[in-house]
Amino acid sequence: DKLVSASVLTGRELHQNLLTTRLVETSVITPRLRRIMRQVASEFGRKVSFGIDGESLKLDRYLLQRMTAPIEHILRNAVFHGIELPDERLALGKSAEGGILLEVEREDTEVVFRISDDGRGLDRDKIRAKAIDQGLIAVGEQVSDQEVYKLILRSGFTTVAEVNQVAGRGVGMDVVNSEIKALGGSLLIDSAAGAGSEFTVRLPFTMAANPVLFVTIQKQQYALPLGGIQGLTRLTADAVKQHLGKVDSPLMVGEQPYTLHYLGDVLGYPNRAELREGDMHVVIYMHIGGNYIAWLADAINGRHEVVLQSLGGLFKACHFYSAATVTSDGDVIMVPDMLSLTEKVMAEPPAEVVAFEGEQVGAAIRHEHPHILIVDDSITVRKVTEKLLIKENFVVETAKDGLEALEKLSEFEADLVLLDIEMPRMDGFEVLSAVRNESKWQGLPVIMISSRTAEKHLLHAKELGANDFLGKPYQNQDLLAHIFKHLSDFDRLESASEELTL
Image 1 (cartoon, rainbow, N blue to C red):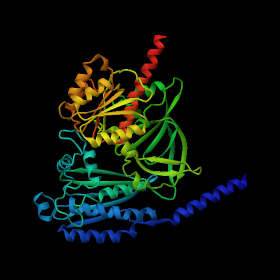
Image 2: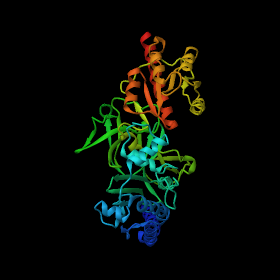
Image 3: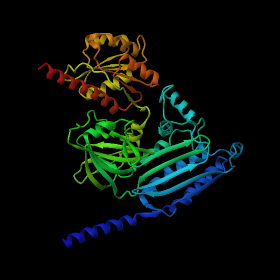
């Protein structure tokens, strides 16, 4: 026993010593940052006072090297986009010299880079107008400030008319965000018109070994970064039912309310874990991105130290995952981006998906491989969606407008309809009204899909009898999750009906 204990202690000492050799002071990059700030300020006629807090903090050498370029880019943007010209600042009652501050600090298992300025702030209206022009959001669509600010992280998105060395090409911030995600971190943007902006980057303290919590969702294991996790508890099935997904009925920890959500829902799983009486269910409390949230998981498998791996370019569209790790058995475990997942469920209303309360009960599935009718005037949307659903073993039929959709419904026994709104000859609302007026189709699940996600469109769709509404653009996993959800609901209904008949 003494030998084993001594061996464990020696291993820990070696591990700690190796970590120490990787640490360098932040000050190794500050001369370079100050030089770049002087150059950019001079080039664009700005007067800037640049301060750095936390130069003596020791960080992982590899992490600091990887983060140098992203920090430089954010600082350049702060000068060009944020700080006004001296005459403009004086006219606004500000000092001619703008201020930019880089703060570096350690918070538990994370290192935080915070870059703030006292400039003009992000132009929310200008970003929104550009997003509407590019079809990223619809006119009249309600979008939170955070969602608007995150648009600048999209590839090709820029509000600058003239191209220069710093801005206008629509590249840069998307690369910055990708690099931060590759390091297992997150980026939060805050801004106030006329007062300035703040970019907060959170990363694991070391790249050698990162503490994570292994959890199980639907028999699949995930690794949650410990940063932001405040505690764990277990709840009865009744307590989960009372609080799950209910903003007006949060869990209380002391005087702090936490909204409870099932992690599997936002990860795209079609079915929720069964809540059985007598069982205790695991809940993880987190404070992330200014939000207090509690995540329901199927199981917790302990704390582990892991090496995070970048997902690479092939997973660039996977917005809800930041990295991956490989176990000693060779299993690949995904690391969810907890900030993105939190923002998704906390959005009011959610940006991508709006589910209706009191969803209609429909007819049971009639086919072993469910039949789905896709109704959209875009041939690209029809072809891409058809290919996706065929891969999932659905039988698919398509229609290019409302009239053709009604013709297809008469001969194609659909188990579910994906219905666009804006179409020639007959729009989606007219189709939905006709469907609900036919007794044989009254229970047919219909998911409306459109870029028009303003409140009036959602209410109108609900009034006409839509079962759900999905906003464009959407992720494939969101579409599949909604399809599986409704088909699963109706499959259970069929089983219940058979039992009653017997």
